Image (cartoon, rainbow, N blue to C red; front, top):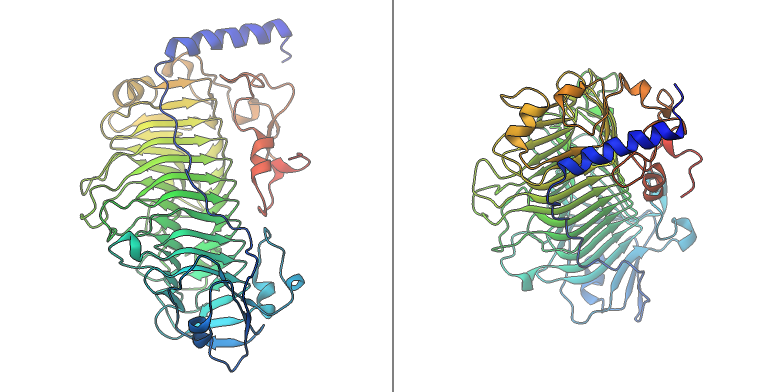
Length: 538
């Protein structure tokens, strides 16, 4: 049905009145990372040390001086383990393939397994392939393949720090650039990089086959490093958590991994790991989630694609912001100042799980979390299970803001438990209501749940397809179905709002309700196919 200009103005005016009526004190915004890792390629100032296929790479590391470049022979195998020594000075030691620069993608572009032929192979049959001496620093690896010896299970490929008890012992200023790290295809490997360091970056790299039966495994995990960290433009594959911060008590009292930048990565699990899928290869690797924060502050997660996660060793959530004092010895553990923007989360049992306080050991409170302008697609259903829950809030959070997201999920759009959650905002989102909508433990959907669990919430200007007007605060809209929202093409997965949609320019900020497709597409690089981004200029 056509809506004239007068109708649109009246529609917007009614929403404005409703929004004003429910508005309370604005929640505190998350703090951005305060410092970033500089990944500019360094200019060599010293020698070039050529290490042939039969030469001793560890001897070259021991002999290298800051400013030197160590070249390893393309395609050659070097048997470790190897240790990065602590050296004086602040110039970089670069370890790289001797292949010409044009045999690798230029900086800012991701490698993949097709580049392995021009990469030297660092391997080990025991211990990490690479580990650091206390306080080792200023190393950059470029165009290197790292893996276990064939048929060998390793706990770590790269171990940057472990159980150091003072910041002076922490390794720092380390960059993994355009490298290929993978576990054993048959036996797996627990962890690609243990990121217990400072000023460390992993960029333009490719991680596969980090998997284990009966235990957690990760492409990247950090728990005893202060940061800052940069994880940008990588393919990251891990069975347990593809990337996690926390999960073990820090050895350094008061330490919280901080100032973390996670942008333009592709997080995924292959269907060969999914029991019951036609592609399943027969080994029940322990599957949990795609990304988890248990102890972290000032985290920016932007422009990533998170896909393929299902119920196995956990309940199917793709993303967890769940504070944990893991072993009971780190009561300072916290998840705070998290910005999750311009991401795609798809093909998963459930969306985002947020825990306000550790319910097993004392912890600090999860607070200041922004979830904005993300696309959630194919959440729930028979293939992934997990109940299709979009957002789950447990125990007691503060200042969680969920705005301008577009979702296609099969379960509730918010499910909540615990004591009151203060400063909660849910506005300008598009999602189906399904059976329960916004629901809490022991409360009916809608207003009863809001009154009990979100006493000062702002819940306005949302499009809740299939919901009932009387069950929710004024200022929200309830089209009969997602078909009635007015997407450019729901069946074609183009979630821009068509010119005739009554929800264009109807959000609290005057923008379209739901995602800003242009901003989302501009943030994505090296992303798998995204129909909404076709023909959208950056």
